[in-house]
Image (cartoon, rainbow, N blue to C red; front, side, top):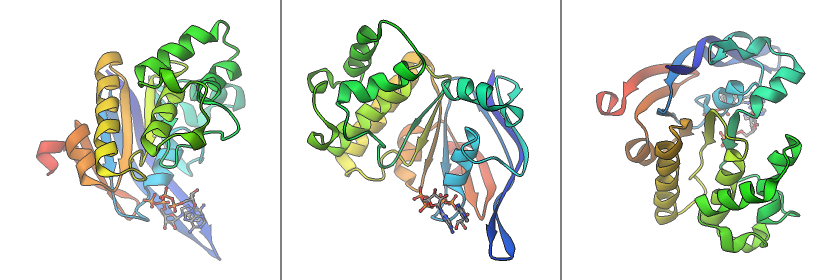
Length: 229
Ligand code: ADP
Ligand code: ADP
C-alpha cells in the first residue's frame, strides 16, 4: 500500500536573472509503515524536497500524492486539513519558548479544535518519556528532551506520515541513538510511515528500511538500504 508518491517533481528558485533547479524530476514511492531515508550533502536539495512534500514550497511541476490524492492541486482549506495528517519534526526542534512542554504538545490539538485534550497530551508525553516535564519550559530541557517534545507534538493529531528534517543533527551521538530508537519504536507501534532527511549515514543504517541518495537535486540511487550501501 503506497501512502506517499511523488511523480516528476521539479522545483526552481530565482537566482539573479537565472533560476536554480533545486529538484529535478524526483520520483519516489513510500509504502505504509516504511521508514524512508533521503541522504545527501549540503545543498543537494534535501530541505527543498521535504518542504515540498507538505507543500510548504509549491513545486514548479509534478505531483505529490497522499493516499492517491494529488495535494499539489489542493486549495488552502484542503491543505490545512491534509497538513494535519503530516507530522513534522525539525533539526532545531521549533518549540515555542513561551509555552510549557504540555502547551507545546497541546497546540496542534487546539488548532484542530479537538476537545478533551488533557488525556491525549499526557499519553503523548508518556510515549516519549516526558510526563515529569509537562510543566517545564523548552529552555529547561536538554536537546534530546526538546526533540522528544517535538516528536510528541508531531504525533498529536495521529498523522499518516511523519516527516523528519535532520532530526538528530543538533544532538550528540548518545542522544542521537536514543532519538533514533524512539522513532523506531513509534514506527513499529503505529506502523507510521516515516520520511527522514539526513546527511548522516548512521541515521540511514540504524533506522531506515529504504534510502534514496539526492545529489544536485536528483535522486541518483534508491532502494533497500542493504542494496544501496
Ligand atoms: P539541502 O537541504 O540539501 O542543504 P536545499 O534544499 O536547502 O539543500 O538547497 C538546494 C539548492 O537550492 C541549493 O543550491 C540552495 O542554495 C538552493 N535554495 C534553497 N532554498 C532556496 C531559496 N529559498 N532561494 C534560493 N535558492 C534556494
Ligand atoms: P538546512 O540546514 O536545513 O539544509 P539551509 O541552510 O539549506 O538549511 O536552508 C535554511 C533556509 O534557507 C531554508 O528555508 C532554505 O529554503 C533557505 N535557503 C537555503 N539556501 C538559500 C539560498 N541560496 N537563497 C535563499 N534562501 C536559501
